[in-house]
Image 1 (cartoon, rainbow, N blue to C red):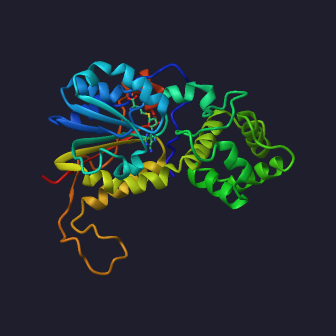
Image 2: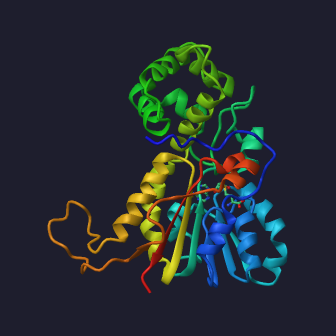
Image 3: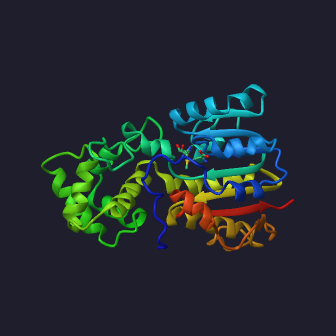
Length: 313
Ligand SMILES: C[S@@+](CC[C@H](N)C(=O)[O-])C[C@H]1O[C@@H](n2cnc3c(N)ncnc32)[C@H](O)[C@@H]1O
């Protein structure tokens, strides 16, 4: 796995990542779907170019924050916020059948989600293990207290890039036998118990991120969403996806590459039924990373990977 880790858990900086690159990719776009509205930074930049934007977020706090920030654009009719899960965009009333010149997803969690202790994403002492982006479903504590040893091993290995995943999973199971996991301290304690006192913030960030990905089913959702979003692009429209995790980035890379080859039938399908015409093209062969200048000013940009794809006209 590549060494992409979650954006740092430092707080206080809320600048959106790679805005110039996204604006460049969406040059001339009249309509944009921002699948991950967050604080509305990317949407604001796009609205300022004159585009109309619909912003989705599954988090009610993000919808409230961005709605307040972008209220002038909402009043003029160029912006609308929709609370929902973009991985189920086809089920969101009012969006089914819509098409857009640009579709953006800036994956993961926002600064304000990390900063708010009550959301339970951080490993700061005393934070209750929640990590749900929306208010429903199992929390991080539920996963840590209820998942099987096998599932915990898979979460730490596949989502946390952790070679000693089994050891950590064993430690979680051993500890929860005497006391349930409730706060971040319990998971930090298990990580230290499994790996020794040398385990530090970068381990906590990576392994907390692994639990968050499991809690929100982020990779499965992304895989489901990509072809649906692709089909929502107008001919010649562009898709921009910013990933902070190697597993997410790999899913985006494989999907965009497959859509850009002449035959994009499922790999195991014996006969080509797609007509052998590429659906579109990669804008750049490799992912785009934030400039050294942006990384110097915004540490969260360090692990960001932007991939761009353009639908055939
Ligand atoms: C990195 S932040 C986006 C920041 C945003 N681009 C900005 O400029 O402020 C990611 C946001 O996506 C939201 N999100 C993550 N997965 C989602 C999903 N499946 N559906 C809807 N929103 C999602 C999170 O709640 C969070 O607010």
